[in-house]
Image 1 (tube, one colour):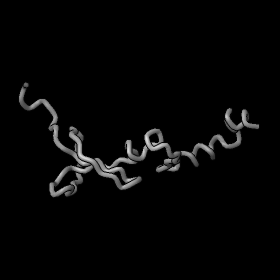
Image 2 (spheres, rainbow, N blue to C red):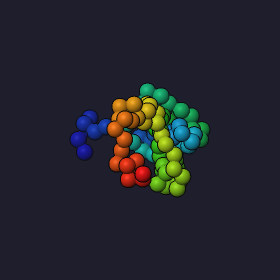
Image 3 (cartoon, rainbow, N blue to C red):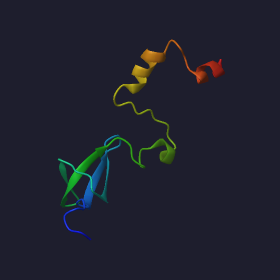
Length: 89
């Protein structure tokens, strides 16, 4: 391989903040934060959904609304309604 053109591929800790689950995998993602995990220092990436918390894998339905997107949508289109609301009436 040509030297100096490939990103740094290293072990990184991904932290699912919704359920406080951490796992180590390899990635080229750049981070500013680090964490000590299982006695070793790793770069840290915080995520909101992983396979441990995703409704498809867990079978539990959960609404994830971190930036107020659902409320913003309801304010913008609440008067119009949706096709599912019309179909249920």
